[in-house]
Length: 173
Image 1 (cartoon, rainbow, N blue to C red):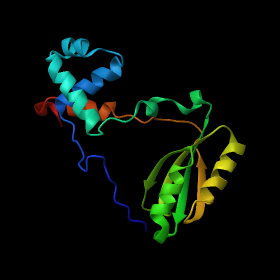
Image 2: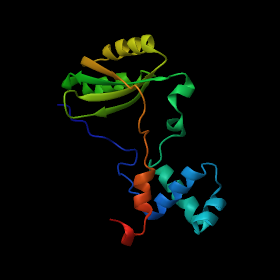
Image 3: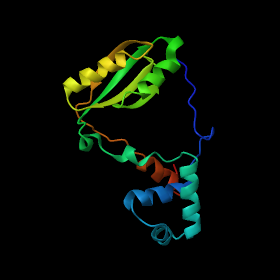
C-alpha cells in the first residue's frame, strides 16, 4: 500500500477553537458580512474577528473560494470517484501528473483495495471516459476502478462539527 506524507503550507495544522468556529459559522449564515457586522453579531471586537480571519487564511485553514462552486454550475454535472492502483516507486510522479488533469478535483491516499481515491468532474459519460483514459496515462497508474455518483445525498459539510466545537465546553457531550 502507498504511504504519502501530507504537507501543509505552514508545516503545522491549525486547530480551530470555539471562537474560530463561531466566526466561521456566522460566515456560513452571511458569507458577505463585513468584519464590523460579524463583530456586532457575535459580540466580539472587530480586531479579534479581523485578526482571526487573517490568521486562518495565512495558515491555510480556509479552502480557496473556488471550492464553493458547485461543479454542475460550471458545466460538469457528472461526479465520479476513481480508485487507482499505482506503482509505489512512481508515487510522486503519479501525483504530479494527476495535478495536471484539470478535471481532477481531489486526490486522497487511501487504505483498502486501491492506493489513491480521485474525485473527478465531467461534462457527460463520454467526457468521463476521456478523463479516465487521461488518468490512466499518468505515470505509475497500473489500474483504475470508476464509481459514478448517482446523487449527492449529504453534501460536503463541516457546519455540524463546527457547531459542536462552537458550544461552550460545559455543554459538549
